Amino acid sequence: MFNVEQKLSDWRESLPPSLRENRDLLEELESHLREAFERQMKAGKSAEDSWNAALSSMGDAQNVAREFAKVHRQIWWPAWIAALLLVVSVSSVLALTIARFSAGAIRPLLATHVVLITAGYVSMFAIGLLGAWAVLIRALRGWSDRQEIAFESACAKLSLLALITTLVGCALGAWWASDNLGRWWGWDPKEIGGLCVLAWACVLLQSFRSHRTPAQLRLCNAIIANMIVATGWFGPALITIHSYPVTHPTIGMLLAIFLVIQVVLIWMAQLPEGAMKMDGRAAHL
Image (cartoon, rainbow, N blue to C red; front, side, top):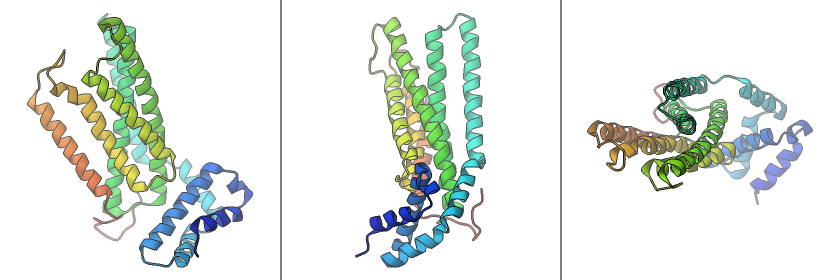
């Protein structure tokens, strides 16, 4: 009786000590070996043949380790573009906030809250941007292991940044509300939006740090981040309560269009790799 877990255990024991001691790399290699095995099984091969084909596709352990190490040192330019947009956005908000603080229009507590919340929300949008890029490239041209590793690494870092900045930003917002509104939490739409963003940041961090999370689920989670942040950030403008502006039809229309696009992207993430490929060339972006 074929036992894939026993095969994996034997495979781990066969690796050089330098690989077995690197737990992160070992988990990453095992994850890709599992995925290769499952792909072969879905193609209709027997368990034994699928395992042998998966091992063959992985290649020599030492060479694989060197290749994976190279991937982590390489620059994936979509991640750098997302990081640049994040820096520009947060820097712009920081400059405006400093200007308002200098003019006496905003106090330090609220100013810090605004900058941190912006950093958290834009970090989530950056993850969504990378997710959208990955979905499109995967469907149109295919998706390589190197791209998947770079995507995981970038989104894991952005998820951690989003979690920390949103958590501190929400705490400062509650502190400001206590001092100025007499309560820490009032189920305000913006407060609920911030809580949803914080919760999804936790989901994303777990998703991108766990090598057992299916690749397509990571893509969907990244796209959903766009939907949650857009709704939490701009949705309150559609509600005529407290100090929020009267609903403007343009805001609702743009938000609806944006959300529909995200739904289409989630649908595309469910397609097989290269399902919409225009030619036979492999993806190198």
